[in-house]
Length: 447
Image 1 (cartoon, rainbow, N blue to C red):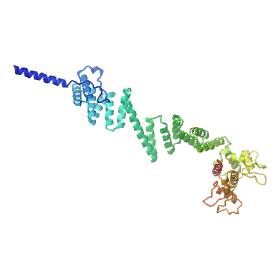
Image 2 (cartoon, rainbow, N blue to C red):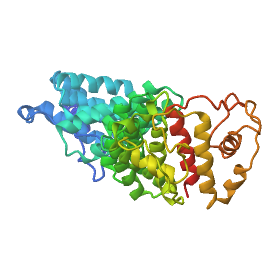
Image 3 (cartoon, rainbow, N blue to C red):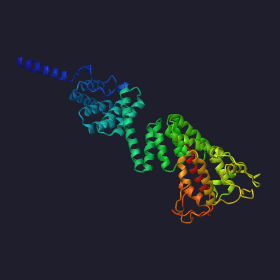
Image 4 (cartoon, rainbow, N blue to C red):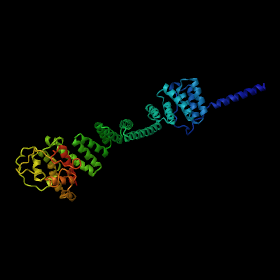
């Protein structure tokens, strides 16, 4: 009888000890795994024994008793196989053990059963991060935030991942652009802007890529957005000006250049503003003037107009001469013809005619250039040697009537020899050639 009592007492003691091992400790003051999200049980199951096991498993986990936590979660699943919070708890135990494949499988199973269950979404994201699968991790954590925006720690991690991913995309875009893989660069910049749509520098770099791809309209749109986001982006403003100038929108180009100049004043930009402002004025001039540069051959009146408009200051500063011309009245370029003739840059013929519709040869153009160089040499002494230079010209000996003018035009760098050694005095001058020559004279006249 006494032996049976002793056996019963031992059994009771062992049962009590076994029960004691299933009792979870309270949560510690400092959680062992503070980033893990408590796998809450749905409200309708909260009072069940299996829900209590999930809670006990969580307490074991946060006390770093992984075996105790696993025992409770497994028991809860055994009692209720569809209890996904218990499976999420098992996923966290596996994550704590760094059994990442096992953890991911557990969280995936939960997300499949309950796609909006935040503890599983966060656990899945944390597991993917540990597996260095950052892009997938970001999607999982973003999904958790979409359900529960108040998760501050998760939001901070998402921000870091987004920034890190953005940096990688930007570096890829820049590398592709530098290597000339422009289509790849465009795709990367589009992806980067999808992640950071308010970044002015990304629009600027995408605009540069579009411009290199020959997509002027897209480039202009990107540069404008960059300047809208960052009004101090002088580089984008200059690019806008250049693109508008190419489209012959000189008013728009001037406005863009002036905005850029107000941000970053520069002599080169100031000169460009002056050039475009002149183009704006030219756009208001007669159609005959605007057609000069496209002409295969220009006439004397057209050359006079080109000189009078684009070298207005130089012409105005020249000593005025009295001239008599009988055939310029009523001509569309009459005022410029008169100014250029009075400045001595283009001379009337001996019979007091200017012959505004007469042809212009390279010899005629050289004559005008040499007189302009002489005018400029008054205040630019460095130009004076070109007036007495004697370069070798294969088709024009020094005794040729037009040699001094051609020599000065060539020596000053305003006109070039043809094929390296010929001047071709009788060759007609095109509008493009005349405009280029006038542009070089204008460069000489610049301060």
